[in-house]
Image (cartoon, rainbow, N blue to C red; front, side, top):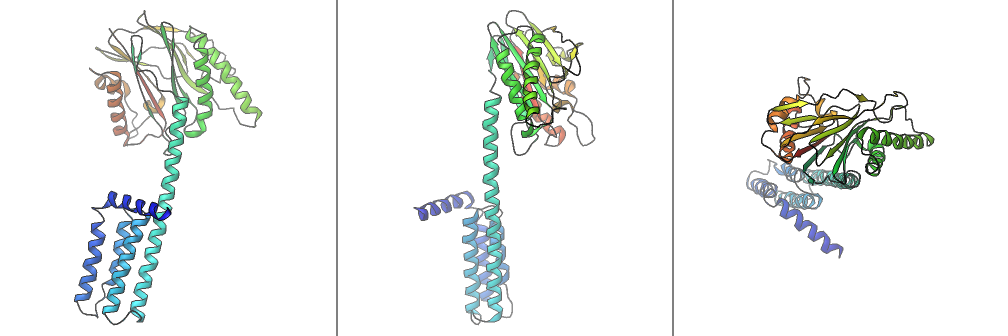
Length: 369
């Protein structure tokens, strides 16, 4: 059974790189034939090492080993033809080729193991993200919703930015937040906050009171962390808590130290003038400011963009911040929320050169006419 599996794996590798493998195989044939045809005083056999080295760049361990064995066979054929396998020169050439092939095969094996480990980590992080941040509904009453998440950590697709939506009767309640830090270290705080919001959103209609209730729950989470020896002095979450009623085209929100939403209308894009920004969640004891709910118009055929500071603090090569309002005004024109976020994501990554330095979350909410 083991032999059959190895043969199956080899066939799979062959299918993947069968065109590219013609290059090292062709080199083996060319070098061997040329060495046999020219003077025995000219030694081209050492060039056969190129074949397994090239194969390692696109194939796996088994195919690289097979090409290395074929290269060794070519070297042995050259040695036999030009005076015998057991001459010191030919023995050195065969031995050196065998050592280099073994080193290349060992490298391929280590690379494959690291690749499997990275795949496993990404699979786990994808599962964590699906559990923590359930996909938001594409439709919620008169609303159309789209989301995009860009993680800064290479090993994961989940980090410290979060969002959630809860459907309650005739309204949709939204949360977007940014946990201090990034990557897997912020997942615990994000999980605690999301769980509290999903439960408490059914109990509080007013966004400010909902934010206060989430704050209380998050403080209990921090107290439990402190009891286990964690340093929680700098644990906090900036957040926006929103209530979007079905029958009134308004946005009701409470700001907990988070960047203000961006409203896109046919006339352009503008940041909502939030005046009562309360303290981030987790800092209520240090900054006892009463949170207030503010209300803004949400006209039909407009789009509300929620985002984290990973977007607005992204910089290009000249260290210039990403101009979100100006770019969004152009990118969001005549676009659905999903199309708008796809355009925005591509534009943002192009602006920073392909990689963000901080997690970024985007939520676009469109309201039908």
